[in-house]
Length: 451
Image 1: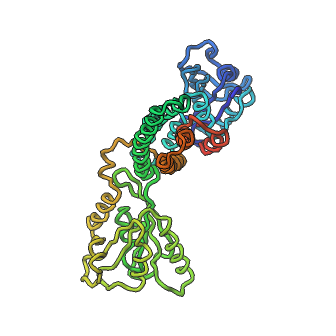
Image 2 (image 1 turned 90 degrees about the horizontal axis):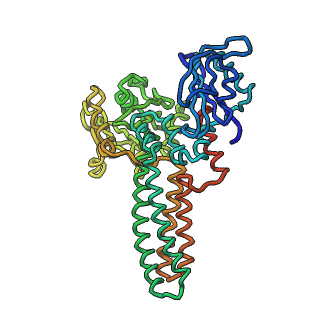
């Protein structure tokens, strides 16, 4: 933390501009050594200066240099950013000069790590930086922005304050055990407080499913036996001829993938090989891969043919997917109805055709309904979506039943307090108020270089 780091902050390649960022107590002095223009050690903070990057007497590039002095910077350290012409050779040469003159190459995510360690942002806000970079939809962007602004971490901070007040009241009871009325009131307060904490924590965990949906999208698998129209459904959803469509069974021998944005939620759609018994080795491999995808999918679109009765393969697939989140699609409504669904499956199914683009609309509407997309459209998108954070929240939630059991069994209040403090510490790990160095190093190593 005492050295000065440098890294390229823009994608390396041909472009109009590249940005090389430095941060640390010697950032201004080091850049000033290779800059021909104003003396950067004497300029005001948050100013931009025109000049040249030089290597002894050689001009390397014409640049604009931004100088930002501590503590009002992203890392809370002196930060200098060099805006040079985009290009691999030029950008690398500027970085090389910085490293030769005293900078150290930044590790992945080290600028954001310094912002966290210097108290500029908390851990949830730091993770939101990477979510903002990786976001593929406008909803994912809004979700990350709310995290970056601290709106999401406030949910956890407020809950920790509530738990801390409870711990304080328990400590009073431990300090003054001779007062029985305090003990009884403390037990009542613990029960009341835990009811409130459990309700809020349960809601945060429940809402986190929406956050994961927005951030990660829906892994969607189109499943069915050959020639039921799976590839046609994929093409209609994507509104392009992504998959080959013929009347010959087994045309799709491997998975075909595409993406569609529905109400700001990304669907990663996979069209699978038709499920049937076959002696064709290549087709067999495709069928095996299709079956493996059932367990990995967030949504199964199970396709049946309106023009024929249920086959053994249909029935086997219906059984395999019955406990999965699925949409039962009866395709080819333009043909004579011969399918023989029982009453329960009939009620579950939707009817479509792929002759016209509008024929796919019932499926799109069903997807919206199944994942409450209309509700998400009008929500504030203040959700937790990070897998690490959600795991910690669930661990905290799992502790609460033992607290209730302890109250029921009239355990000493200091024993019950141990579980309450564990919940407090777990929530501290969520937003980084308590952490280990190993976790921090591992987390920021996943960031891109220069961020």
